[in-house]
Image (tube, rainbow, N blue to C red):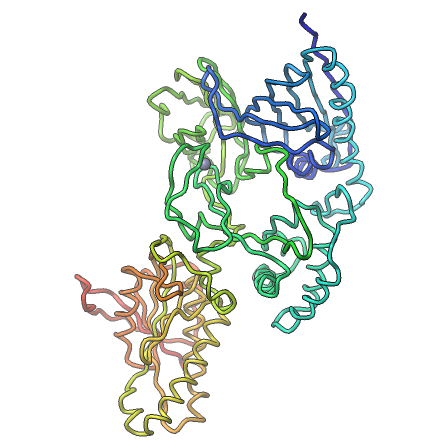
Length: 607
Ligand SMILES: [Zn+2]
């Protein structure tokens, strides 16, 4: 017998902006945990007979009754609506479709939102009818309670989200013991308090996947300070760190590794169906989690496809073969594009053409998009003339800067000092798109040894290394190695490299006040791509950028900083060079081993 479906539609108005309601309800993993749904195991991605992607999901209702279903990708429009469909394979239900719509409030106020929850269940049998009443309807009610709870907290802060159980089992004695150790490191004691508060009060999800940038924003403090705090907290055993390999297409963490040494050059994304090369700038991110000796946090998966998993995607829709769907293009500061999931065919949206007609269209066929670039219409109709169903996303074309990449962390002196064993496996080399390499060398070091004797000269050279290390670390860089009297250092940001070089030259005079023989430093800087490798159990950098940087340093005449046009034209570097306290002279030089002459600049400090 065929059972009729049961549909619920509930409207309720909340004095919360659409933006905040969206943040709360689109984080479906957290929502499902709060409303009492059960953890789910998801399979890799599969295709149904119409070519539409789904994952097979398995869960146990009440921890006992096994159910399984095909879960189709969430479809959503940011700050407007989302919907998800499930076709059950086992269990008392046949089908479910449900979601959330955010509508204007009755009085049109932007600080209020009318939230519409819809859920349509089709039972498979008598048991299903009961399940809908007790489990299905209850979860809708609980979603409303989640919003009520947010109102009760009465906070403007969207980060203060309702928590499932405010009491967590935390080993307070161990935590306070380690906190005391942590305070021996150069950390802000106030942040140490904030961290232990965080570990004691936040949900398992929050403490199992901690991103220092997001937490810094919650605390309203400098993100680099929180990153350093977390590195020290990891060293003393309060936190653990892990490296997450991010798929360049879907930008979701695919593999988690506890050490750089287990990272391999290539990894696989099941959704995109392709192998990718790891890349230190974008695809390897650092997360932290609470150490199990402090708190056992299980980050179970409740939902893999909710909008908040891929926040760079503004709209995601399934388009069946032969049909068309309209996408509205919101005003956006970042450039946007359409992408077909899995095949990753892309059509860019040209932000420059505002004079275009209101409504545009583009077609997708088995050969790909009908055009490579479309104008920024307010609405775009996408017709799917290909032979199978497709999922199209409207997304930000650029990567979020909200990440702590391996490129950034591995260039920090704190990281190198604290985690000297954190190196790649000896047979791996990982690409890095953009890194800044600084080389220094002592001018006339031979005469230094001649004039003051080996022991004195060596002592002076060692103290000059300390001077360099101090200013390099202070500017978020780290010393990679010393080669004789020379130093090679690495920076994530070019402006930090320049600042370090600048401060070193500025402080050499003071350093020389306590020396028998003045030291004179030559410094060279260069930015570009490189590869990161494990060399003698430390992270080292190789490639053309590194070689040129060394050659550029060789063009120094002492008390100067030398770099090329490319380095100088980087935006933040160019801004720094507007300073009136410096003198810049240009010259041309043939660099040894480089097949052409190069335009170079010599920076000297005015007295
Ligand atoms: Zn992917």
